[in-house]
Image (cartoon, rainbow, N blue to C red; front, top):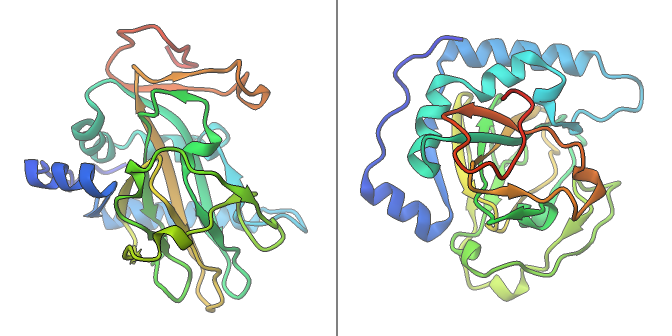
Amino acid sequence: MCAMQLARKLSKEELDEYRRTGFMKYGQIISDDDVNRAREYVDEMVAGLKPGERPEGFDMTHTKHPFMLDLCRHPNILDVVEQFIGPNIVLFASHLICKPGGDGKAAPWHQDSTYWPLEPMGVMTLWLAIDEATVENGCMRVIPGTHTLGELAHKSEDTAENLLHLGLDITPFAHLPIIDCELKPGECTFHEARLVHGSAPNRSPKRRAGYTMRFMPVTTKLDRSKESFYQNHPLYLLRGEDIHGVNQYVNA
């Protein structure tokens, strides 16, 4: 993949603001050519779905598609991620969320951290727009500052209408602003694991495909004993070295 100089150095003020609010709209991070290739690849993935399979469900995409793993370790992406979490970078997970036009599912308000047996919760998410993400087609929405509230109690959700099976009642946060993360293809956001966020359904005619990549430092441990789901969960050391030895990696 082409590594255009789109990985700029973040200022101290930008990093401080990220720590304060729990998210950042970064802007374009990969080239137009790269995002066009990614969109073509996603188109093929969607076209290959079996009857009844939903395009929102491409979880751990990098483990099944080498192209998507290469996207996660794009030099531009790792150069920016390094400024947040340091030089030793682990890929914890990824998820291609492709909301079709007309009936794309919503993501209820939630914290990512509620699903993850990680200690400390040092993981962060890069949300890369493959298609344009707008209010009309269900872009991600965030409530700044909620990452400081600790782990919140989630309730069960109906997965016939929603991407996730857990959600939050945001009534206690009604006084806080909600920011719509509208993005052009190739642009991205970053957010903390405990930031409250979600998205509306896609009732527009336009698809909304976004690729989430979850990165963490080697100091964050995946506790495989807490949930059987994570017993064989693969971790990838994408940059640097394992200087702490708290995890095992499939490629190191």
